[in-house]
Length: 164
Image 1: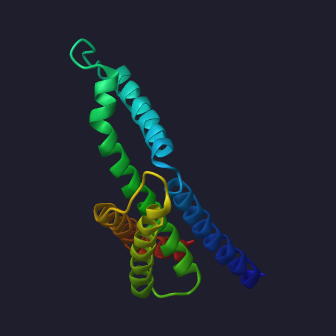
Image 2: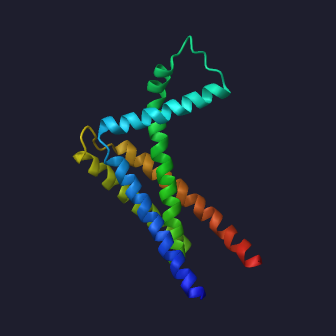
């Protein structure tokens, strides 16, 4: 029974990785106008939410000006965050598959960097989009953080589960 649960856990972990890769690919497949529109909507929601908490002086700065100013930052934060999640998912799948912690960390980082690179190359073929080395660096940093967090937390989780 335990072997069966372990196999299901491995399959679900790799399925989560594959689904996340599809999500990343689908975002990258959006033409520039569609991608820009989506990111501006997200930026607008963030600015409006912040405005409710910390009153922004609307006389000096219009919401449109703020969206234009912060959209680039929000887009780069999205890159970073999406790859934090990929790093975490990769580490989880590799560890559940029996890969040792240090090797899993290296494999996760290498895979995430390779995927980020291929994703930027993919954007060569998307209308209005193009590859950016800075995006690969931001994605790689996110993957490093996600994989690193998993690496730091995993030993504590194993110790906790052995106590029960």
